[in-house]
Each structure stands twice: as C-alpha cells, then as structure tokens.
Length: 404
Image 1 (cartoon, one colour):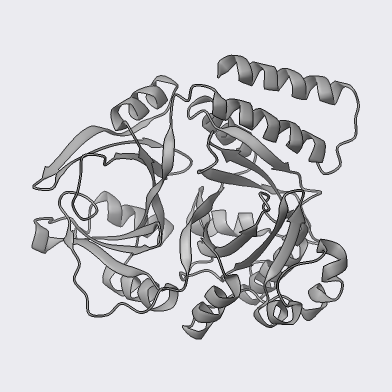
Image 2: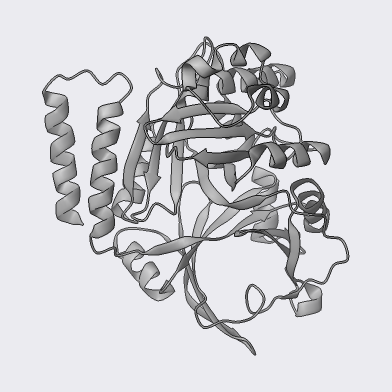
C-alpha cells in the first residue's frame, strides 16, 4: 500500500509539473480512479465491510424516532434504556434496507452526551463501520496516529458477542469499528427487540451512499491526510472553489474512499466568497466540524421522494429553469423530465452513467444536518454539474434565515 501511494504521489506531482491545465481535474480524477483499483487489489490493513450504523445524539430520542419512522419510513428494530439496565441514556434503533440509525438521548444532565447536544444541537456522533476484526482495526489506526475513543471491548449476551472499538475523526465525531460475526441477537448486547405497532411503510431507502463532513478553514487537507494515512483511504475526486461556487458563495471538497468503495467520505471546507457560505453557516451553528449530511440510496428516486414529500419532508426548491436545457446537458435518460421537474430532482452525468439526487432542508432546528436522496444509474461521481443549482437553492434558504 505504501509503495502504491508513493507511486500515486509521484504521478500527480509529475503530471502537474508538465503544466497541463486541469480545469475540472478530470484527467487527475481518472488517474486517481485507476490508482484506487490498484489500492483495492493491495493488502488492505483496514478492510471495511460497510456502514454498520449511524448514531445521532438528540434532545428527545422517542420523538425523533417517531419523526424518522413517519417521514422517512424507518422501522423499529431495537431499544436500550432504563428497561434494559441503562441509567445514563436511552437509545432507539431504526432500520430501513441496510441503513441503521441509532437515536440517543442522555438521562444525565451533567453527562458527555448532554454536553454534546448543548454545544452542537442534534447531530451525528458516531459513524460506525462494520469490520471483520475490531481489535486489529483499532490497533492499526491508533498505531498510525488516530486518537482512541474506545479500546477494543467485548460485549456479550445470550445471543453471542460483539467486539467494538473506536477512534476520533474531525470535531467530536468518532468512528466505531463493529465486529459482529459471532452475534445473532438484535443489534447489540444490552439492547432488546423494539416491538412497536407503529411502522409505516418504508419509502425505498437502501443503504448509505456517502456521508459528508464539514471542517474549518484550511483543515480539508489535514483530514484528507488523516483518512489516507490512518485509514488507508484514497482520494478519488477533488473540487476547487471554481467548481463549487455561485455569485455569492463557494467551497472546496475532496472525496475519500476506502479500497472496495463501500465507504465514501467527502470533506468540505469553506472558500472565500462575497457572502457567508453554507459551510460557514454550518460551522457557526454546529460550533465546529461535523457531519453535514447523510446520502441515502434508492432504486426509484421519484417514488421515494414522492412518498417522503407526502409524509411532510421538506426538500430544497429547484427553479423550473433548471430543466429547460436538461437533456442537452446530460443526454438521454430513462425518466420523464416533467416528472423530475415536478419533484425538483437534479440530474448529472459522468463517464459511467448518470445520477439523480435531491436534498432535504435541515431536519433539525439549527441549519446543520440534512439528508440527500440519491439514485445512481451507473454514475460514480457526486453531481458536480448540479452544484450551482444546489448552492443557489441553499442560498435562498440562508437568505430566509438571515445568515447569507
């Protein structure tokens, strides 16, 4: 892995020295995609099987669970609290497809969970990663410089055992490594099955496509280096402020991916603009770096978005003019443009195919965390062609809040 990464650095530096103009970094992206395939063939010191769960610290887990069930179609899975022997917190676990949300509220006014909520509001605390060996994952990452959040811990009940460990990433966010190959119970030891008579129909969400982090001024490279050096990720796409900007605001972003491509973490930082960008707004209200949005995949975005909208989910508004020359920009697509227009769904194309996406408004009171619904029709990119329309939509929301 180290030799391949050195080879990658050599290629990039040599490429830039040649003076080749890379306006959109397309050639560099292709180089990085090629190197990613080489990385995936190499011995992976941190093999990741997928996203295990996403845990949010929230002010009222019971009411938040009701919202995500009603509006997003999540189903009851597990519960932990006073009834299971916990005295400091309560957690509700929801599931849809391969997506698992854990909503946790403190029962102790002076505890760390309460302190986290007081500072950040409702937000993502844990991005848990499914691994074969949680002990090795912790050892390899801490050896490479990660700050430990949780030493390898064996948790047991009558259904077997789970081993978990964890490290810190940007802000107060953490990665927990979950080894569950010897467990047959519901979610984790200490949880019981959550029997609920209220489980609205799912809306078609399948899995976590990616999770996006916002970091402070000049910190993007630091955290990209963290994922490369500590977790063995490769940078697959890079966007400059020329790529992601409007008349008023801008940002920069890099996308980090593990070897098998199951885990992707775009990392954003602010860029100079005439007015305050969405990243600056997030950092102001979240009081630091954290997870900006969770992208969830569907096989039928029209059906999914329609169901979510009917259940009260608010999405960003996309002007009708966006669709005037859509087919000229993206080429032929399977969907009816008029239907996409009705729902405000964005479309973009890369060399592999196209994608459809739409973003919710913030799902909490602070203008921080939101969700993206995405359907990939071959495309492996992140909708760079939609950035201007997306940012203008976000700016309209910022203006209404008086934070633009």
